[in-house]
Length: 234
Ligand code: ATP
Image (cartoon, rainbow, N blue to C red; front, side, top):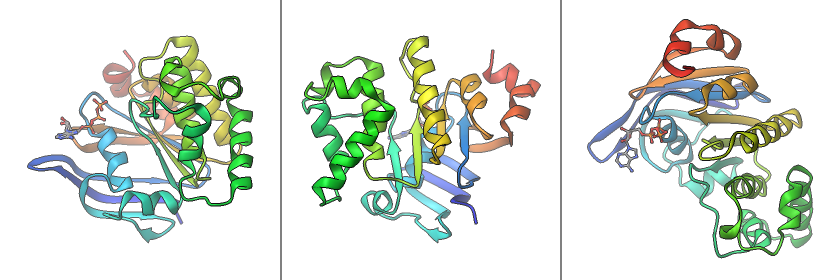
């Protein structure tokens, strides 16, 4: 059974028909990437999965329908979303941001264990434990956003443009961490403008254009495809 499966999903912002029949699947242990140009519907696909936008069609997580389910319920069931632009709490410290990520965990010891585990992936955050999130660099804030999402111990991580606005050397670090998380067993659906790098770490990819999947294949095949090269790897 696929971990995540979307079948003919449509999404609407009022009168705007943003997704026009998106079908995709993510298998346990995979990194799957969604690529496409600005406004294609990549972020909306993640929002549809999380229940943050009105949808029609079938969305299944672990075989069970999660379509139109309230976002906090889907989060509790194991789907973590790191939105575009990171949205950490700027006035809260690293520690407090991480604690907020574990909002439904009552066991203090468990929260502490998960913070320690986050520091294994993000040692920079340990150095900045008491610093306000908003005063950190863009790369550190992205790391904090991912670390916060991991606090719920998710089964599936939805990452929306983690490389956005970051210097190339920081982007390399973020992608290395995504690869490490996946090597440790995390299943990841990765939205990226940076198609080249995303396809290099993904096993499979989907190309979205005006709310539809126009191409899907193994990441290697997409990297070699002339259509993808022309439109997205230029
Ligand atoms: P980007 O990288 O620019 O975020 P994207 O592929 O993620 O691109 P979406 O953000 O999913 O694209 O947007 C898909 C379509 O939905 C676009 O036409 C966009 O203008 C529209 N849209 C997105 N968010 C809203 C909103 N809150 N209200 C109205 N329309 C929206």
